[in-house]
Length: 360
Ligand code: SAH
Ligand code: SF4
Image (cartoon, helix red, strand yellow):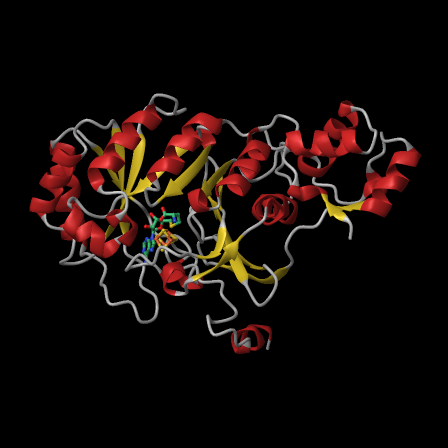
């Protein structure tokens, strides 16, 4: 079987080339061709010796996950359903804005953490994505969208907020992050790459050591009892531990604040009293709040908070000197909004009927 070079971060690619008896600068050249130029065809890598091109063609490939479907929202948001093999699919979403283009990347097929309000969680865990499948989303999106007029790739920011819990697929996520940051690959600054986590405390500490990018933490509740119900992993890593981990993370973070995500669920976590509790909870953690209107999906028991409730909640936080914004929902018409990603084509019992439905 050929070696997929998309599976290697810069260090691993250098090691692979060394193993082939090639000089390190060859690895750097190939890295640039693949990720900076978006090239998959070794024949097009014109500054490589013909003998090396021939060798690469025999032993290696550049293979991103296949695209099963593409959808375009009326607001310009784009969603791709990617084939993750064995009846699994994952989704990637591109959100164009005036000043930036953000790609929302998946890290796992499904998710084991089963948050009460999340469509990905409802489908259970299928498997971790490989490095090629994670970085392949960025590689593919840039190529598909095409360079901007100024020659730059359209994706300027990446958020690991698609399907899955990135910190439970730690090694592959960090390899993909290294590619995003490397000047010979995507060259994104640490501030433009955000990992979103439900609060896997030991992995937050590891990320701080190995690759401190911007961090978003999905909070959703001001107290342990409610968070245990909404985000079950809270039973393992309760709020006190999570807040301490956030403070530790900030010592190395590229931004001087943690972004707390908070899905607004009517009558569940959106009262003024809860906002006051929340302000107390985070008083020692420099942070910003992103209030996310709940995005419904079939069979979800929750309702989106009304705009009055959201505004009142936001005002309480602001009154406590906390920056709080409400996230504008994008791509709702193509089920590409936060928490709606459910690229599954096979249910947990292993039947592939949904695959047929999608392909039909
Ligand atoms: N597993 C990680 C990252 C993926 S989820 C995490 O939980 O942080 C990305 C964000 O979408 C999280 O903040 C999550 O809480 C939010 N989300 C999940 N379901 C949602 C829904 N139905 N409506 C709005 N946001 C949702
Ligand atoms: Fe997993 Fe995040 Fe969804 Fe929770 S919100 S189930 S952690 S993807």
